[in-house]
Image (cartoon, rainbow, N blue to C red; front, side, top):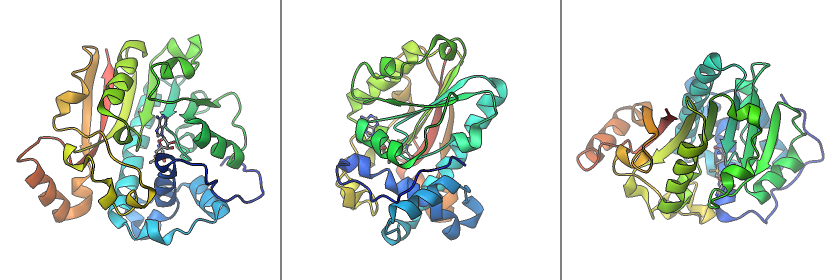
Length: 280
Ligand SMILES: C[S@@+](CC[C@H](N)C(=O)[O-])C[C@H]1O[C@@H](n2cnc3c(N)ncnc32)[C@H](O)[C@@H]1O
């Protein structure tokens, strides 16, 4: 585990609504295993950060469906990363909109390199909480709404000489649809062949409904992007391929499956899921 500098720190009030949402997955990964032992992800850094930020965690933990969704997606993404780095042991991983997550604790194989990237205020909070990572654990400041976000990653030639593993979780639903298309197009045009982009997806019916979400509602962040068809993920560029789709529904038992079956009368997408995109 990365060593963290003291002293303890309150979450700075300068975080925007959407930036505050980073605390939702942080608490889920830190404490969600107590609610769902079979889904525990063993995130020691998250537990330490929750303690140091002195977060009042009860409001997050009463939203059990969200806690379960986050533990579930963490495992799906971690497994996708492990499979990718088994094929490309020296490749780079990039976490877009990383918040306070720490995938390198699970994906570090001693040869690969990881880049955590987020907006300035989020990266400033990270910098104040976490010790600098070193050569194989780097950071970058980006804004995915800017067309130049890919260049802002400042990936060196060595990173681009082989496939990249990119992930973007809990982020794209807060962007406008046109901005999401730009993110996908940048990945499609810039990433080397064989690269992967793992993202989570919300059904289109969730757009504009964040105020009813038990954890996101209090932050005042809003969902702007959701999909009604999986083809929307690849339509924006001919190089994009949909390689795998994972739905969280079965993790929620019969109620999750029933809700998704009803939704599937209108749409073939999961209500909430994770997809793996690739470029040829
Ligand atoms: C729900 S949190 C998810 C954090 C992290 N991915 C996780 O799962 O723990 C949303 C994150 O998206 C980041 N974010 C929001 N808009 C962004 C943008 N335009 N560019 C980059 N990151 C953004 C926020 O700063 C925040 O860290």
